Length: 277
Image (cartoon, rainbow, N blue to C red; front, side, top):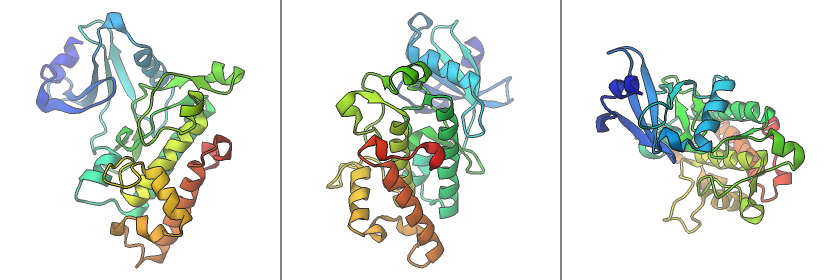
């Protein structure tokens, strides 16, 4: 803990990278000018070690994938719980889609979608649910390769899946991405991650946020699905992609939209598995 406190200049405000649901993330420099790491400081003491914290350690320490944020270490012996990750320094997908002036070209967006599809298929093959797939949890490196982070809501679902095919949980996830069937049965499955991935695909296509209170339909998913059903695809695609002038981009984006449409099916049984996306 003391090493990370020193690495982040005492968890100073100018080292803060962002806030998550369970803690604050800081940039840390090891060994006085060495490697840069990301340090997540949780808002609890080691005596209050939460199941979310222990799940994140367990999952990230056991599973390795090029599109997963790598866990480098953890500490439970200081004043607060903390996790140390590899530093992924090019911001989040949400940053690039919704706040930055420079726009991601289509092939970069497509590659990001493929990266996240692959890592979700990998996790699901081990009965792991992420349960909070969203654009702020997709981190980009300098080459715009995507890495999925924040396993604070993840859980090894193997035992429950073998018995019931679902994991019963409390209210978790993020508005705009949460499987609508959750509100009926209060359980999430791998198909819930598929739904969230569908929302992510629509974000990549439209560059619109998952939730926007200025829209008549606040949530992106039903808005985009409705526009697709009305044959109004051209009205939702991000104009910066210039799909009207590039038939190849338009064709690829339309195909991705069709996949997103399947992922966003109201009935879980109608959604594809990530391995089939």
